[in-house]
Image 1 (cartoon, rainbow, N blue to C red):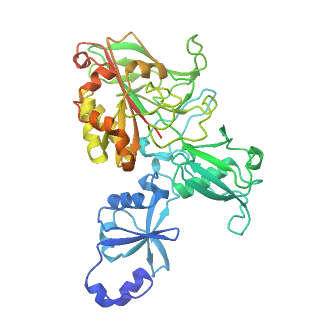
Image 2: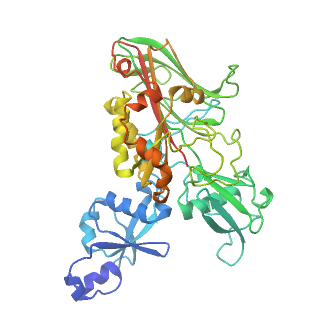
Image 3: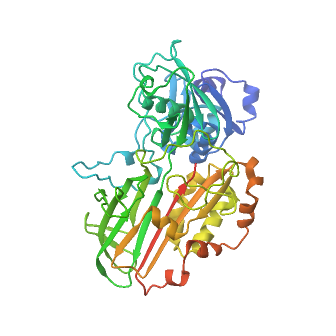
Length: 472
């Protein structure tokens, strides 16, 4: 390649003797002035994964939001490189710029529903990778960067203390969340901000919330009851199967499919809880016909986030150690779930997916369910070097999300996994969990309460549900 050709790609000539050695094994990637080296790989998605690993701001971004650009002198500008041309262009690249792609993914363009009842749009085939709450909208009336503003501190759950410059009389809590999103990569929708133990309202100006110079605001990440799905297996055609699901009052529905109305239950033992219901025909082989949408489906889907109005205020401080402070109960509390040593298994990431697959198999889940479970949680699991996990006893999970199916199934299996990341420096505190991971995975049958022979008995009317939650 000639020096002039190099200049066309990089805006400056290259040393010919260096060029003769061929491209280096690494690629220089730059974002917001920070430069890092990443492996040179012709696989575009592997390159994106490396970018997400090295730039914290992109850590939780879906891949389609990450744009890779290179400078082309022909247009005197940086141009985004598309995935299909990445292998061809890569040999000529030594440096790239990384930016956020403002163009929405096609899965975000589906129509929603309006009307008096609370409803949710149908999830796209790529619903798992959508990022609700992410936006690049500019801050209102900002003079930040011109020497004005007030310094405040945001303290994360792991103890990091971050400095932000804001305009107290102009910026709202929501504006601050967008600043945090841009800098830390934590989605607006996933942030819980508190001042002295009180939740901050998104729409209220920071000054009106009592924030002043030097204030410390606590940042916690939202929990998610992730993609619980309900399968119904009937040996014969069973019509008009009624499925009703209620939530603990500290949770609220954020995703439902097929579409159905969210109501507030009036049952004496569950006042004020959100509730949904479906009516389906269950066909042999697991196919369902939903009466409400007139659609054929393979399972019922729901998802939930904390109900901020009902949640207790978080503690002012939280230890990163699982053993410091008062000894919490390992019983599942939907408002404050925990994963503790002695009641969980700890594994390195490179072994955790195999362990989960073996455990789900021992609990009676079929191949599609196990595969869907693992692929849904894989992006979250992959953020951690070590993972502690546990499967809940069905009776504990039932208290958080009561499920009522009529006619009554002969077998109900509800598998729900809690997990959290564990720092390598903390592993010695999890010795009991490391030992637990060495035991036969069939131990989870007794903990969850599963009769695997009945789960596999195709002559019975059976209901199977799986779901999970990352404890942050």
